[in-house]
Length: 235
Ligand SMILES: Nc1ncnc2c1ncn2[C@@H]1O[C@H](COP(=O)(O)OP(=O)(O)OP(=O)(O)O)[C@@H](O)[C@H]1O
Ligand SMILES: [Mg+2]
Image (cartoon, rainbow, N blue to C red; front, side, top):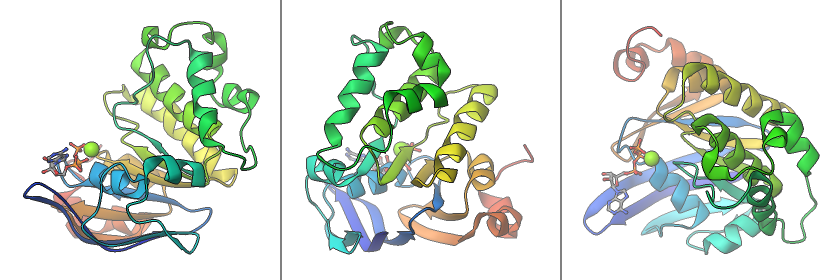
């Protein structure tokens, strides 16, 4: 469904992606793992068109989408949950969710407000509250809910566990698993490699802008290079 071939992306002298190839099939949940500065956000931002790539290609459903504008990628159904959540603090929870619907753009609605509230009941309880007053975990749920309101065909998640307590990470990941099981295709970027491998079908490991390992998540979790370099200590 989403195919990236030999992608190179640079920022004035910093070669952030060095020939990345990756694919995500319909219905899959795929992890992209890597440490700080590996290029994970750059890859998601290249897919969504927020940053421009120098060479290589990105195709979505057979159509070439390399370097098209973020407005067009979101209307096509590539919906990103950005790093740091970026909810609008001065709007209510409900208003933030309504903002998400602008990406639907005539495509079939896959998620209604009731679906988002069912997935994250706390958002229903706090729908009239300013988003800025929510806890970090609730803001992450809101960011995911807002993306769902845009009727994603592929959900691009940038470090949804960042800064959250383990219990809350668990809640967010259970919700992500559920939406994938309901049929949504997901590309999950994470520094939390162990958790990401537990949750996903396949994974890629990005290191200094290049894919260094890839395969079924269960196999990678047991891989000796993976354990030595990317999984840290047990737990
Ligand atoms: N806007 C920018 N201008 C210049 N360099 C950038 C910019 N954004 C990222 N970089 C650089 O590109 C490289 C990849 O950064 P990127 O943010 O994609 O990594 P990341 O894997 O998402 O890291 P993190 O886990 O910290 O979010 C880093 O060397 C970073 O310093
Ligand atoms: Mg990042």
